[in-house]
Image (cartoon, rainbow, N blue to C red):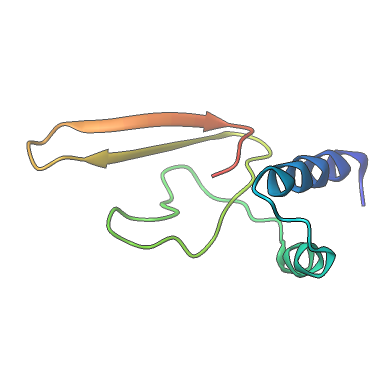
Length: 84
């Protein structure tokens, strides 16, 4: 594991602890399911109305998320080096 990976895991574990997750077997399960993914620009991670099946740790780049209202207006936010 590279040093930069260590910091990602540190952030993940501290975030899980804030939500009361301290069970080591659960942490091991999460760790074993983690994988590095890359996405191309404009690729959608989830579409409005879908239930999320994953969560993401943004290592590099930006993720924009938004939702549109029936009126045609939309709300959006940009995330960089965050959890999503």
